[in-house]
Image (tube, rainbow, N blue to C red; front, side):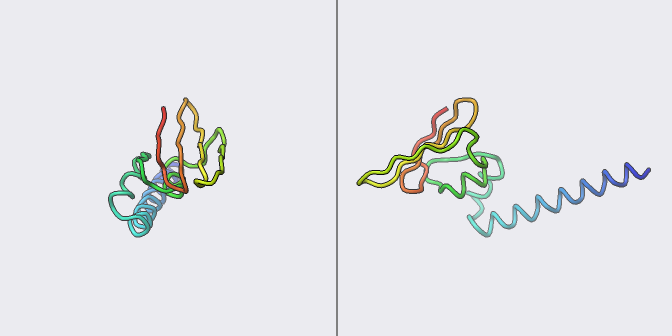
Length: 95
């Protein structure tokens, strides 16, 4: 009986946390971008902060190139997924 109550309480807590995260993302980024993040997706033009919200930190690290044109970054995720940024904006998705 105690286990069942603990499971129900954990489910309620998880639901509340999801609702809070959704509300925070809507306020921070707007509905369209928040919905994308909540689905674990990314798209060209979003910022590094938005990618971190959606995919988390890159498991394979970050490679940076800095030149007169600005800073380019390659974020390496598992399973051959790469994200490329120019001056903080996502410009290319490779998988």
